[in-house]
Image (cartoon, rainbow, N blue to C red; front, side):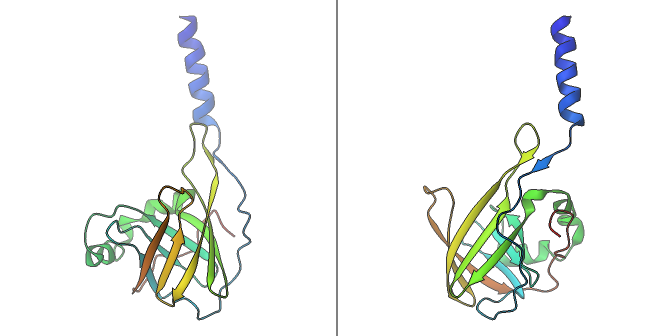
Length: 163
């Protein structure tokens, strides 16, 4: 009985506590350059990991492992209902900065058992305005190539995590 009460107290405490987020260390800056196109989506092959970049320096991370073609991926983002929950998930959001031919990205990653969201950083090389080579933070994955595809309208970059 005592163990059950202790378990319930711990469970209530954890479920009622607020999620915390580590601060992003890369400062959000508006992007006004032309080094990289931002009027669409970047994705890799064949996994379809994908993300959107915005003029306000925000990145929306759509995730990895989309099952389908690039056409299916674009069709998914034409319907707000398909991605509306990402506006409540810190790990969908981050910031980026471009310095000549380099890109630096920092985003939150999924929370731990205590609801804490840590950050991870990516960096990469801009090959041209439609192709990126990104270094994955997990060295075993290595470098991945991302390709641009024009797409409009993109999901809105305004979110409650980045001001």
